[in-house]
Image (cartoon, rainbow, N blue to C red; front, side):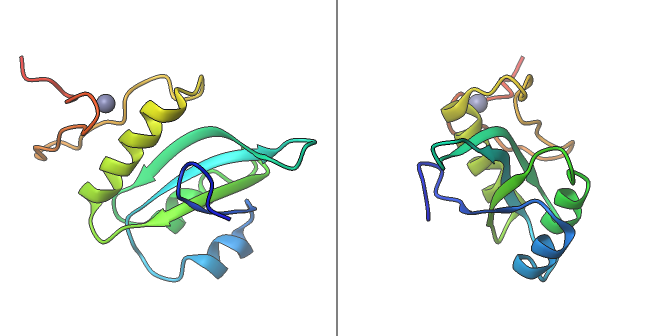
Length: 117
Ligand SMILES: [Zn+2]
């Protein structure tokens, strides 16, 4: 089931499905998407959660029919994967680069964002 993104899914974007697949508060990466007439998942949006992926996904209910996800041990790992997917897909819905939280010294593995001034 893993496509180019390496994420699990896709699954219907419903509260029940989120609860079924993500049982703990964990960092993670997700995509929101839809399934085309040819049966292929089309990614429409890439996002991440640094603390609680299930909670973040619940805020996205009804935005798209389906989602994919991957859990990570650390928020920085989730950020790195989000950056990878952000640069891979270049989606219209992802207008800005994934942000680095205040007080973190993370850098995008693809482009070095945010560059030091
Ligand atoms: Zn980048």
